[in-house]
Image (cartoon, rainbow, N blue to C red; front, side, top):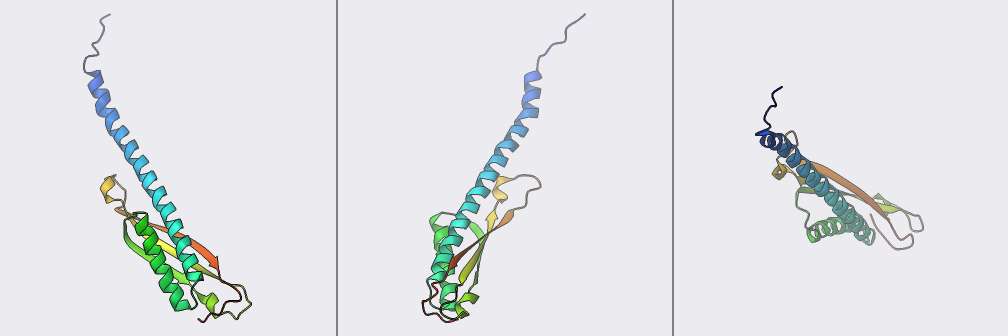
Length: 142
C-alpha cells in the first residue's frame, strides 16, 4: 500500500480556516461595538431624562433633554450617523401635588459599514428609553 503525501495540506487548511477565523473576529468586534453603543445610549437617555425633569416647562424640558443627550454621546465618543431624541413631557400639564414623570427616548443610527461583513447592513438603529420623576410640588407649566 502506497502512502499519499501530505505535502501542501497546511496551505489548504490555512485557505479554509483563515477566512472563517477573520469572520469570527469581525463578529466579535460587531458585538462589542453594538454593546458599547447600547450602553452609551442608556447613559445618554438617563442624563437626558434627568435634565428634562429639572426643567420648569415642557419646552425647556425638550431642549434640556436634547442638549444633555448630545453632550453625553459626545463625551462617550459615540459616532452616530443620526441622533433622534424624543421627549414625553405631558406630565408638565399635571396640577401640583400629582405625580408625573418625563420619559426620554434616544435613538442612534450606528455606522457599521467599515466592518465589511457580507449581508450586514451599513448601519443599525439602536434605541434606549429612560424616565425621571417630576417634583410633585415644584411649579411647572406645559
